[in-house]
Amino acid sequence: MRFARLATAVMAAAILAGLVAPLGRSDGDPASDYLLGQKVFLPFDAKVPPADQQKLLATVAQAGKQGYPIRVAVIPSDYDLGSVTSLWRKPQLYARFLSAELGFVYKGRLLIVMPNGFGFNYPKHSSTSEYAVLTKIPVASTPTGLTRAATTATLRLAAAQGIHLVVPTTPVASASTQNRNDRLTIIVAVAAALLLGLLLRLLVRRRAATRSS
Image (cartoon, rainbow, N blue to C red):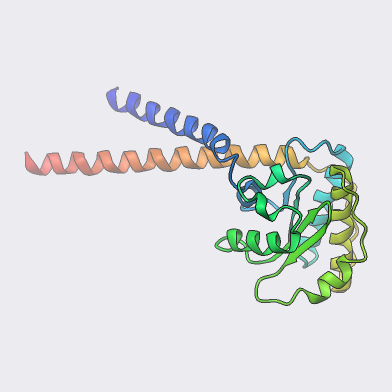
């Protein structure tokens, strides 16, 4: 009974830590957290119509299925850069920075959209041809305009590689919903890992006590 209560307490603490951690890291680089587990970063407070969110998500998902995997970060304001606001309105530099942040998990194509244009990075590859495509795409400075520009950019970048996407019309979960789902998954995984570690530690102690007796 004592062991069960202890395990329950550890699980509760782990879940609480998981809930608090995202808030505590809100001054960091949000996109570097979200893009570790998902393909599109769109700030929670960005007032983008669900239809535009869904179109971007569907386009990126379809690009991956057709052989053009890419991750996208929509950055409407300097607030969305967290502690790296020095990279605001410097999408090309931020693309390189964010690629380095994601490098231990993701080493593929990365598209950044800010009000003043695009950033693109593909580690160990030249981005010259991609920027030739991106410079021809207009970018409106509103969150909705940025999201639409990101969709257009993904379509044209894929087309430049001979991949012509047919975006599915099936509804896709919004970016904010995916963010919440991924966060919940991380919380559960952390809690499970902590609980497993506790169980192993108790098992080792019990065996040591048995041997000493």
